[in-house]
Image (tube, rainbow, N blue to C red; front, side, top):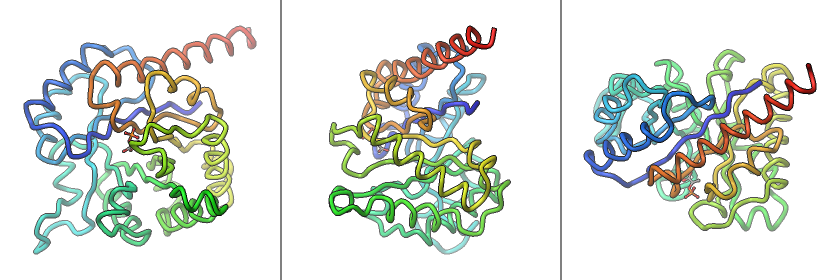
Length: 266
Ligand code: PEP
């Protein structure tokens, strides 16, 4: 069974002290007994302090972007060894806001994914269609280009260190969530693409998160979909209570899946 991963993308929010306060509150709320993976992605400036704050807990640290060179004359950029040094285990790559506002392309995503993997950072590769693309029936073509471009040249072992986040752009920060059925359809399509490119076994092990206005009220029904393995959460991750409720609703869902399975098996 795939372990669901819930990641909070804090975007351009939180000073260092605010980030530590949020992390400390979150730690207290989710304790250490959760069966889901939990990740927080603060801005670069707060990575090191949040790394200290999560020490000894089940929360992992992610950065929101990475550059593909290790060092050199690249003003403003941050490299994979620097993120590793700051305590990161994961890095978000190809978020739609980076594609939309900062010129991220499938090629740059692919270079960043390879740089992250070279330093044992697990990439969370974001893919997703815009509203106009969905409306003209291009969802699958866009997702296919994001996936094949993003993972180009990766071995099966490399891919198994990656997480995919399906985030329909029209659902990010808009309050509009994809219906569970819409999310499942695209997640299943992504798993099919990975099956074709690798194998059914490899594809079945990849965690595919859903992102786009996930809230405590809709997390459980999204999680109930067979190919939805967690969530990438923006707005609702900025407050400890709402993020903890999402984490715990995935956790409880998992408990009931395990209980049902135990009853069926036993
Ligand atoms: C995101 O930025 O990845 C995201 C899903 O944001 P929100 O939850 O606010 O829609």
